[in-house]
Structure formats: structure tokens, C-alpha cells
Amino acid sequence: MRFAKSWLPVVFWMGVIFFGSTDAMSGSHTSRFVVPLIRWFLPAASTETVETIHLIIRKGWHLTEYAILALWVSRALTLRTPPPAGACPWRVFRIALVICALYACSDEFHQSFVPSRGASVDDVALDTFGSAVGLALRWAFGRWRGVW
Image (cartoon, helix red, strand yellow):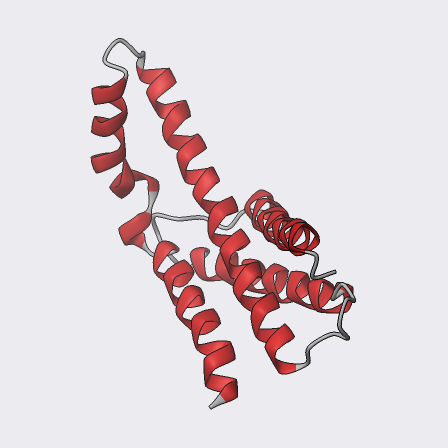
């Protein structure tokens, strides 16, 4: 039961990321609802500006989804083997970062088989950076709360 409580959120979120790697969430599909929204907020924006904002939103989602994944993974690892009281779980953070980076690689590998998508080393780097941001936020929150 403890294993399920720890890892089900991780598996669920990995499923969300996997769905995001399908054709349904490709740039051509997300532009159908994101671009009109951008145009509604910025009616005078040029096509290039709208495309740039759309790209920033898509890349921002990469960063965010992997920050969330890192939080879930580090939580699962911490629940499994809690660090000593008052100790920052650096080992857990390193393992979580490696797991997220490996999942980012597998995500890009998956995208290489989707005709409307493509694999990108830059996206792996962005995803890994997002994971590091998530872990840094967890560390900062832990420090603020006086946990470590």
C-alpha cells in the first residue's frame, strides 16, 4: 500500500507527459486553441510574435511538467526511505534528477516515432532543467519551513 501511495502519482504524471508527447499535443494541434487565445489577448500582435509566444508556452510547459515530475519522484523516494530528521535529502534529489532525465530521454525517443513530433536533445536539457527547478523549489520550501 505504501508503494502505491508513493509511486502512483509518479506513474500518473508520467502518463500525462506521455500523452503530451503524442500527436494530439503537437504544435499544430495546440496552436488551434492557444493561438486564438493569444490573439484575443494581443489582437495587434504580428504572426511572428504570436508564434514566438506559442513556442514559449510550449517550452514553458516542458519545464513545468518536469518540475512537477521531479516533485512527485522526490516525494516517492522520500516516503520510501526518509532522510534523518533535519537532514536535506541530497541523495534523494540526485536520484530524482537522474530518473527525470532518463524519462525525458525516453519521452524524446517516443516522440521520434510520432510523425508530427521530433526528438530533440534541447528538449531533454530543458526537461532536466525543469526537474532541477522543481527540486530547487522543494529544497527552498523545506528550508523555509525549517525541515532541513
